[in-house]
Length: 223
Image (cartoon, rainbow, N blue to C red):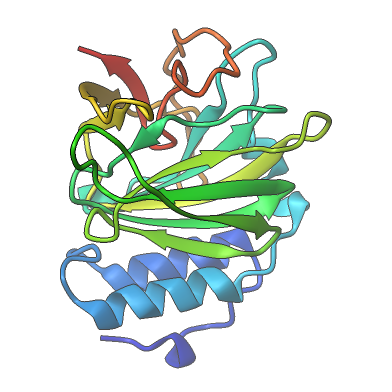
């Protein structure tokens, strides 16, 4: 397996995508903690430059935060650019057993980490501010979380890696701990590694109420 040091320098988003593909190959992240650390190091090594990704950070006024596909990782992972409107946040959610790696490209986000519900309640363990070029890692073994843009005047842009990609997850009510099973559908707007792009309509309406928002993975429709 190639090491982060043996790979070409990660100077652009294109370099990052190529390095991630090389690091994970056909396996994705799996259970290999060395690969998880390597991927996190690669995400750290890229210094955000808006010229790299601004044309892919598609946002529709009046909609939920958008999810723009960067790379599909041969089905073993996917890489998405998310644009968060002012004051928008996800609900509390899990990741269906998948690894979640997130890098902040612009703006600021807050991550709230929760323990899995016990006795009908959710325990907030910590709140961590994320600033430009910060990298965060999440897995169901750690707990649940909610991501939100605290700014009411500035949008935020983040890069998310999910391995493996998932199409079902759970969202949780903060006051009761009740879970709702949700269906996830990827919104494929652009692909940095492809010569053509595909578009999928986003049917969700805008809301700043976190209980009505959608997880920050692929688009969510409650079942």
